[in-house]
Length: 288
Image 1: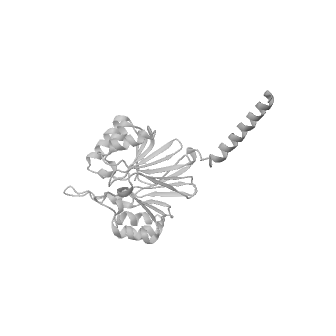
Image 2 (image 1 turned 45 degrees about the vertical axis):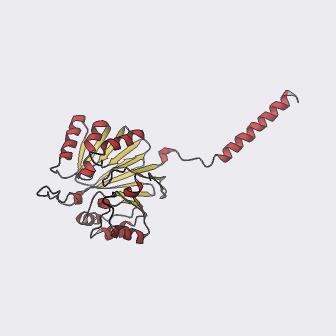
Image 3 (image 1 turned 90 degrees about the horizontal axis):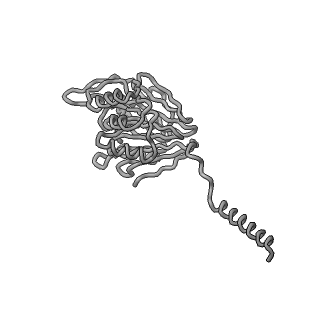
């Protein structure tokens, strides 16, 4: 066989193999910049929720002081050294406990805070950390809109008047929680902090739309206005940040089952991650 014929055969074989490789490689995935990723980091019965889109990242609540190093490791192992925003829904230890540690060990653009001042050592530690690291903060006393990488965030200010507790009790701070929505094209999320009866009633007065994914209030507690909230929101996915020691209440689980809502629970699933391309569809992966 002449050299030219051999070269021609090798060229044809290369083209055939290249075509077979492309055909078998499967569909091309969209770049990460087109995907919103929402991860509910397992901090037991507490909240720590990471939202990522392109180069932007927001953290809603910071879990406990005891889980702060675990949260930091999770963030850093996923390449996150900077948070555009940290939002603290309210000042209970399972939401604000790890905030000071994270502020001291990460770059944070701004911290958004609810409009009340508790007598709480974790709040005091956070204020000290903000001053030490020169991180700006903002008290949310009216609704705030933020757009980052095509995701439209709304931070709903609480209209419930804060009443401090007595004899070491927390007062009604759960109902003073900030509520946050995230809209990316046709996909929608709602993060409800720990709102209970009064907080749910107040939020419903804002005339909320339906949301695809809802972080259920107060770790799966079932209260008087829970049914009204679910009927208004009509979620297709509910995420509950409960623990094996204090699981979500059966009345809530029964109601979600009746609605046909898919339920993810940190007590059962560990870390829970939802991804969406903004088309109203969601991919859900869990740690367990």
